[in-house]
Image (cartoon, rainbow, N blue to C red; front, side):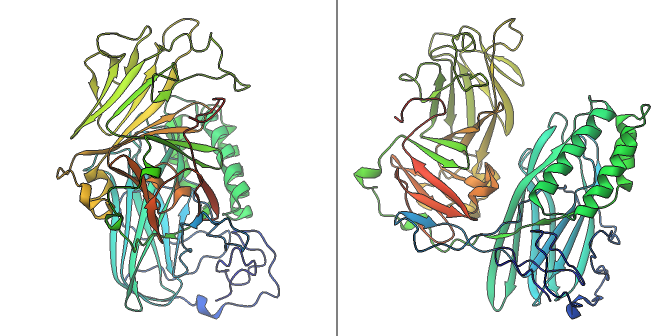
Length: 513
């Protein structure tokens, strides 16, 4: 099988392919690929995947969705890497290829079939398991797809039709988690992938949705992980639909099933943890004892607060997280923040319960705190799974409010088999392990209340297999190759991206704290 000549890519090439559809680099002297002969085995797709062509379907209704995944893998470390930089990731999977048809249109509350294509690149794989989860669903529903293959032969192709209904109110970008496990050479291999895909709003006009679809195709083309010709065909298909003024949204979704396929590669990264954080010596050393830390990656800030209580408000000195609105120039003006109180609200975790409470004990905020269930009082409102969180009244005239999403992760939702902190087990399956608040404006910040542990890929796939925990007043980490205590100044390299550990530092603040 021919591989791309680009050493940073090295993805398999289709027969006669001149340009790599993953990185776009021109290939020298293309020759027919002898390994592309079809392999017939119990319902598997028996044709290859030529660039720009569709695939025959296997009618297996399962339940998942189309997502967009980056194609870059872990880059090699250089000799000039800093001493405190840790290679936290591992390589891409070269044994299995998964592609997703991103031409289908997913609408909130509407069931749409999704095409997923699997191919064994060789050698034969034993006991292959493919699991797909969606974290916006309840614990009972979040596993969308689970399929086992006792023997997946080299060169074998499989395609599945997977049905998936995005919940109402979840329009925007959603993420799916992919877990891959198989045996090869007597060794078990673990891989994972996660990325975002667009879900469209039912309340929009068909023409507005078509315009957004075009923008998403431009994003796919920019990342270079789909065929240029396929994207152009799909764009022209939706452009023709957009010219029909009488077209409704429901008709648009139905017609999207006929759109030309746009096959995107789902990049699988190794996720095998060899060491357990239980091996850490306790108590933690005094130089790592800290209540707050900040992780930064490509402009994304993740603020860690250890414990079971998080206080948010405008006053920087009296809160855990300083909540401020910023204008287009990144300046926090008095007018923009008149809706926020000095100590605006609290998030508290106790066992299986997560409560959002307005103000502080005995005192309410001036403009209120709201979740999807309505206004929150001083006694609190329970949060289960995912919800919206608004600081300040959204109906107030002339005042801005701060909008966020809030997600609660329990030991059950994260999976006990992944838990890196067996010594700190709460002995309650549904105990809240972490709470994540994410801004919905242009400021790329996440606020994490960490009472137990959290796999960071729940925030962004760029964090790879890295997991963090909070033990006896200190933050610890676990990667595919290492574990230890987090301290400011450390650097990690995951999937070719730099992750820095810094002293607590929020966006727009003059200095770290």
